[in-house]
Amino acid sequence: MRIGELAARAGTTTRTLRYYEARGLLPARRGGNGYRTYDEDDLKLLRQIRTLQDFGFDLEETRPFVECLRAGHPEGDSCPASLAVYRRKLGELDALIGELQTVRAQVGQQLERAERARSVLAADAEVPGGPEPVCELGGDHR
Image 1 (tube, one colour):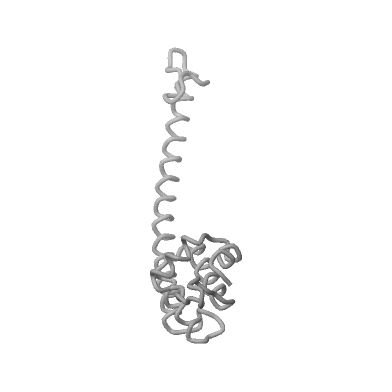
Image 2 (image 1 turned 90 degrees about the vertical axis):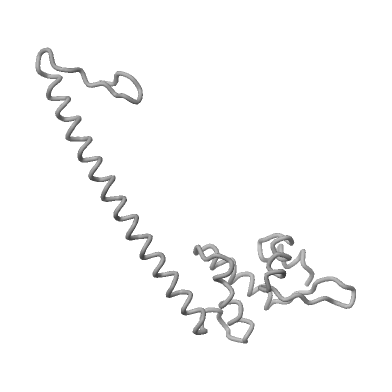
């Protein structure tokens, strides 16, 4: 198939395919007429790249999976290099999850502090002559 058909079937653009070709991820084969030619294996490569990118892998991280498919394996993630990338990505995700849990705990503490402060203000407002609660973001909201 030609580049336009491959791009349409893969859900991408011809520009992206040329970029992948320049990066060595997509083979650069030419027909007798000089046009790029592709086959179903190329479509499988592109689908593997797209799936991995949807999972947050950068383009270079997809290379071992592409090479695994090119080596004749039925799946791009059955080779040792692909498994190593999966392991590394899981480590990165675990680290990010840890960071997010820390941030979440800090936001939760800030919320508790703010709710306690609001309760104190509300209690003081009920005392004759106590302060009126005022929302600093949008004016007076009681």
